[in-house]
Image (cartoon, rainbow, N blue to C red; front, side, top):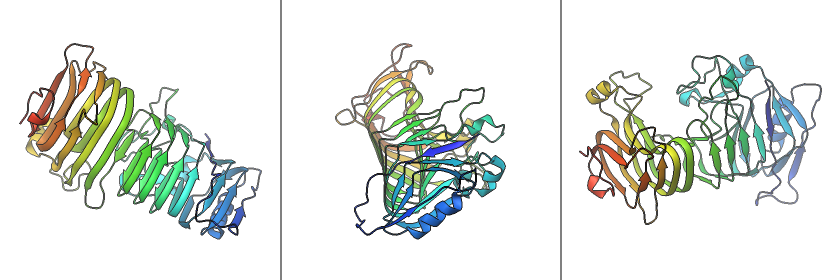
Length: 382
């Protein structure tokens, strides 16, 4: 199984001068590992330089690039990772959170990347009992992320097409001011094995991350915002989105409480606050609006140990938000499901227009303090 990455960065970073050092990587050919020479080029041109990768390269070495500053990357060729899963599992860069690992980890300041194509193999075809679970990658059976932006700031990535990566497509890790523009993502299985953990983006301990003008077609989350160092997710603005043939649209999920202090699935503290969904259109979506504080937690356990992570200030407004469309009918007539194990505050909606093919739309709420601020009759309330 092969991994192909073809990237192109034709634009110059504003900080460059005419005298910028250029590092051009010559491939070794014959299937030899070009990884060390690529790393050497980035080391020599790490500051205010230019790295040119315009040939066909074989990589059997982790591409760990740190301390980059105002580097222009012109990658018009192809990078082929070797297909040795046993080697890449311990070799890929381990980032702790949910056991995520990376083929290529880039960090630094002031990068502008224009990326036409990135293609990776369907590693889910390989038998592995952890595939499809949170933390399903590991140093024993790693499913590396094609491109990780970590410990970085002021990064722009444009025009990326990414198909069938082993795990998450993009990981923004402990970074700020990272923008993705015109990104095209697709993950589909053409065998009996299902795709697993095929998120478009996962964002962790980061701020000021912008995703715009993009298309995501996967079997998992489009964008996941994870907590920062204080277990807080806040100030999220989602605007001008169209979604079709999906499970969940506007989705907020947190684990319930957990009596086990060593649990990796619930029991943590923190909050989700100030989340706005604007101009959202749906077609054939199972759960157009779906909020739960008992994700992956049995109802009996959640009743005994409610979530310690609060949800508040979540808004769906017609005047600027325009939530409209149709459910798939897989949940019967229910189009809204807001279930809190501790009270959710200031959840509002204006101008919601959702229909179900199974009959008049119904709405379900539990422990929602602000049902009077919703523009639909949400049964359950507080």
